[in-house]
Length: 169
Image (cartoon, rainbow, N blue to C red):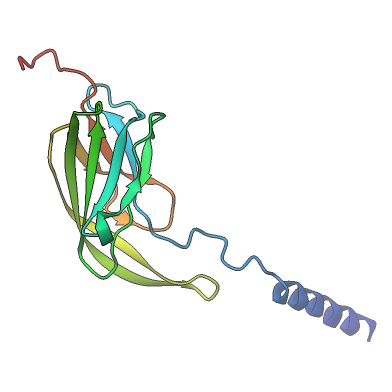
């Protein structure tokens, strides 16, 4: 009888501990594409200063990241789950007069997924196409087309950081 009472007490303690667990879903609940900045000349990670990032077609073409003199080396680029494409404008402010703007357009499939009872459902994205202009951006590379809720740089944006010796411009 003591053994049965000990088992019941242990199960009850586990149930109470589980039931009182308030941590719930501790994982990142958003599938946000993380883009890192790299030098097209060296391939090394870089920080880009004085660059503003806007979502094209968002209300008032909302500014996601304002231009900062300190710079940034990565940005999150949220995708719209109700559409199959999202476009961003990257505007570099060289000085008070000179600006250079590039556009990156992502086409993707939005995949709703049930993650767990605690986390619920979220959208994952599968990038199918990337179009971009090349004013300051040299290239855009998608290292893994599946965008899920892991904080991994799946998009690399290569910026021109110096003149290529083979160019005569």
